[in-house]
Amino acid sequence: MLQDAKDIVVIGAGQAAAQAVQSLRSGGYAGSLTIIGDEPALPYQRPPLSKAYMKGEFAEERLYFKPASWYEEQIVEVLLGTRAVRIDRAHQQVHLGHGGQLPYDALILATGSRPRPLPVPGADLNGVHDLRTLADVEQLRPKMVAGRRLVIIGAGYIGLEAAAVARQMGVDVTVIEMAPRVLARVTSPVISEFYTAEHRRQGVTILTGAHLARLEGEAGEVSGAVLADGTTIKADMVLAGIGILPNEELAREAGIACSNGILVDRDARTSDPHVFAAGDCASRPLVHYGRTGRLESVHNAIEQGKLAAAAILGQPRPAEDCPWFWSDQYDLKLQIAGLSQDYDTLVVRGDPESRKFAVFYLRNETLIAVDAVNSPPEFLASKKLIMSGAKLAPRVLSDTSTPMKDIAAQAAA
Image (cartoon, rainbow, N blue to C red; front, side, top):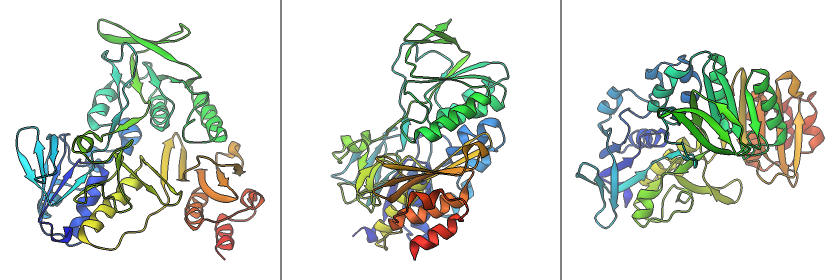
């Protein structure tokens, strides 16, 4: 039984790892506990990297989930700058890059994800950046000087958040997106059009339906982005934001089932009962939607860290919330609850011109998601409504004369 585990090893040092370790200790686990992280920093938050931390408004110390003293007090060994290179499931050992081995009774894979590489010539030039780690920000931030030219490849959340920060720092910004609209993978045309208009109002050049052919450089430094139609956009720096890939290789090479992520059950357990996976690297049951998928969010990492810890300790499964996310751009806070894919009805509540509105997504009259811009009541109420499987009439949702909390109360009655 895993409740008798004497050695627990966590591979990865992000949000899911930090939560799992905290939950294990607070849940009463007193055995050996080790975190293996390939970065030199203690576990830290990633969302501020593309927002306040990039602007210098957020001190590095505030990024860390816990100070070094907490790990010492909780007797958690943290191996930083260390790579796990192999999982020996037969002997229940993790092999490290420097040649050592760590035994485990339970293993948590919180290996996270990595930026999808730009598949074009010139991607290896100096001045081409990702925005995923502290080190990435330290390389990019000194270059964010007023008047310099930044080209961002990809108009997802990371790309648009970085665009907003760069404009606020006086940088000239061009965003190149191959899809016909920004945020095309994750939201509706209503939200896409709103954010496109806002970024253009702030001075960002947004090119949609644009295909990057190559990056060109001078003396090894990036100098421009060339589109498929021959257009050249001058650049002092380029930021790639075309999505991420789950770090599933360790698990796959160990014979653990993977499919666009490490496959886990509702308790974050993999196909090996002694191995769990949590966070960006895991493909989990999406219980409110009847399917499996990966979620790239703080909420998911925290929730799965708790699920893995509870399963190892033999404790009741924690509640599974509906997925939620957020994005800060300029003075706009976008809060998202649920997953809007396959909606058949879209309802707008409020006026986008007011910079305070919400877009609801329904399927078969059931609320499945909301995008709330500067509208916390709509976000909070929708989370509960989505989890309850509430059916709502579009005219009710669009009627701003009825407070959202009253709509939620009526639906629950």
